[in-house]
Length: 343
Image (cartoon, rainbow, N blue to C red; front, side):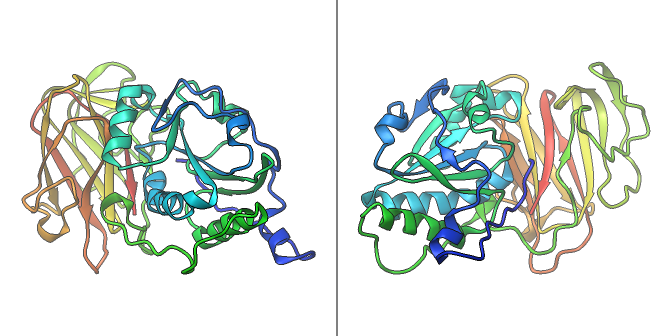
């Protein structure tokens, strides 16, 4: 996911002006009318939102950066709802399966997202905002003006203080008790401070560091062999795969993937070519069952299933983070491999 941190600065005027001024998109909030559908709400527009402070969040449900931001958005939506804050999640897809409204609806339910979600499968709202990042936050005042932006994860305290200031500017009482405190589990937990592996894609359009010995045959079925000793951040395929533009598809029998990584968490975005069919897999870490290093989507013995297209957390290391080799054996054909992400 394309993700950066933006620091809004000003050296004059009052502290509030320094917090909520200087955003590149400052101006009127663009239209939300390009949504193909809405979840958790009737369709919203600038007229219905006038007088409210609005937090517009661009996200996509298989993006680890978006998932780690969710606990804060949920907490802000709950804490400041009665003060007039409206949180709008704009779900703009990265991968093809995220365009499917049914998949988005399932994800919103599974992730317990309580606020309004605009399904932006045609990227109309994304384009209207001239947005480029997952996740992205745009804070709009009661007069419909964008007053604050943040791109990427982090800066949560600064974002919440901007929310509070705009609510007070709007004349609303704000709950006491200070800023929200978040404790999140699974993929929504904050990243570690020891990540040396980059997001890596499995489709030929953006794939890097593929260490299988064979040359990639684009959009054609071909047998690949795992690298024997991949270097850090190299990965490989084993078995009969078709490498497409945005994903690699396991064609027949069993197949394997391997990745040499350095991070606390390893996630893989996976799907099934045939909807509704479970694809079994087994994870090993340095050749053994992951045991206490398993993720939420794999057992200590390493077993798991792919049932729907989403992000799967396969590994969460303990206190000691070091270079490790993940291998996943898929016991059934039809798995789709989109990307690896780390935390």
